[in-house]
Length: 341
Ligand SMILES: Cc1cc2nc3c(=O)[nH]c(=O)nc-3n(C[C@H](O)[C@H](O)[C@H](O)COP(=O)(O)OP(=O)(O)OC[C@H]3O[C@@H](n4cnc5c(N)ncnc54)[C@H](O)[C@@H]3O)c2cc1C
Image (cartoon, rainbow, N blue to C red):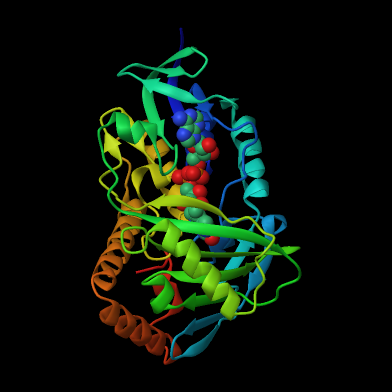
C-alpha cells in the first residue's frame, strides 16, 4: 500500500486549493476524483467581487456585471457599483485552471477514481486500490463520504436547479418570488454564449419536485421557454458542524459551508480548503478568515430558518430586505459570503 502525507477526496475548488498549498510546501499529496474530467459541476458560476473575482485572472471571467437587478412580488431594484459586483465563470475552465496549478505544485491526481471506503488510516477505491494517509481531507461535496465516516449527518440542505439556455443575455437578475420559492430565488446569470437560469430553495421548506414545478411556473410567467431543455439539480449542504476532527478535515460543501440563503459555495470551498492546508502545516495557524466566513454562514442559516417558518413572515422580511437595498440601508455585499464585516 502506498502512503501519502495527505489524501484529499474530491477535486472541486476546495480540494484543489488545499492540494496546491500542501504540495507547494513539498508534502506528498494525493487527490482522488471520481469523475474523469475535473471542473464540470451543476452550478450557476456566479462569483462575487468581495469573494473571488478580484483574485481570478481576467481570462477566467465570462461576463462581469456592475449592475444587479432584483425583483420581488412588490418591488424591483437596480444595484450599481463602480466595481463589478458579480462575474460569471465556467466551472469547467475554473476547474482546469486549478488542476494545472495543483499539478505544477506537485500534487498527484487520480481521476475516474471513486473512493468507496475509509478506515482510520487508509482509503479504499471502488476498484480495490488502497492508499494510506497521515491526514485525510473530505472535499467530496454535499454527499460527502468522509462526513459519513465521521458520523456527521446532514439535516439542512438546499436544492439548486440549473439550465444552460443558449443566447446572448445581458442582465444579471435575481427573482425573490416568495410565493413560489419561499426564502429562495430564481436567477439569470449570463455567461459568454448562454445564461445559467435556475432556482435555489431550502429543501426542508420546498421539496425538490415542488421546486422544479414552481421554477417552471416562474419561467413561464417570465416568458422563458425551457421546453426542450433538461434541468439538472443538486443538493447544497449547509449543515455546518465543524471542519477539524483530529487528522481528518472537511472543506466546502462536505463541511456544509455553502450559504443556506443564496447557495454560494465556491468561495467558502476555497477559503476552507486554504485554511485546512495551512492548519495541517501549522496547527497554530491564525484562522480568522475562516471564522469570519463561519459567522456569515451562521447569519445566512438563521435567516433561512427564520423565514422558512412562516410564509407571511418570509414575504415581509424579503420585501423589507429589498427596500433596505433600494434605500442603501443595506449594501448588496451583505448577501455575499466574502463580505467584509
Ligand atoms: C444549481 C447550483 C447552482 C450553484 N451556483 C453557484 C454559484 O453561482 N456560485 C457559487 O459560489 N456556488 C454555487 N453553487 C454551489 C457550488 O457549486 C458548490 O458550493 C461548490 O462547488 C463546492 O465546492 P467543493 O469543492 O466543496 O465541492 P464540489 O465542487 O462539489 O467538488 C466535490 C468533488 O468531489 C468528488 N467526489 C465526491 N465523492 C467522491 C468520492 N467518493 N470519491 C472521489 N471523488 C468524489 C465530486 O465528483 C466532485 O468533483 C451552486 C450549486 C448548485 C447545485
